[in-house]
Image (cartoon, rainbow, N blue to C red; front, side, top):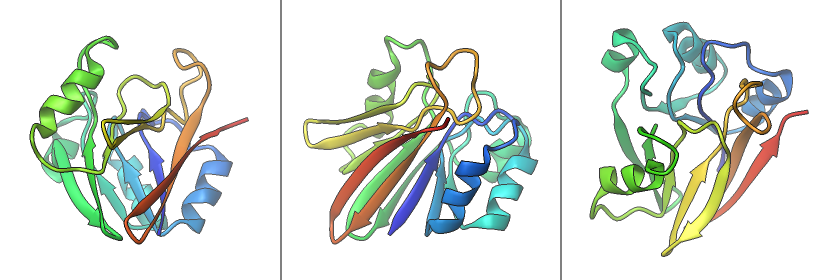
Length: 159
């Protein structure tokens, strides 16, 4: 199963390359900071979405989406949480939200900076932001290929 992973879209227009990737995917994962519910609705017109709200999302998105989410995909347990706090606290906050829950992949956002690393047997994956041209070192999104309990992960830089 192919998952396109995005975060921190902040009501900006999604790049054409990302739209094309979404169309090729089986599922879209968005880990918050849509900033407008219309962004969620547009993505849902393209593909099924699993999502959580972020710190910049209003009451409408908070009513429609959970703060954190766990789901199974091809034998892999995936946890979603936007993130919070400063950059030096982000990983600790993500870990704390899931506590002792058994997960294989933790997908988060908030920092606008891509991260793709296995720590203590768990893949920590932040797709960066596909729309941020100010704070992020580059615009990006992620792709996870999940099959038979295994995960291949990559960050896609947008030109």
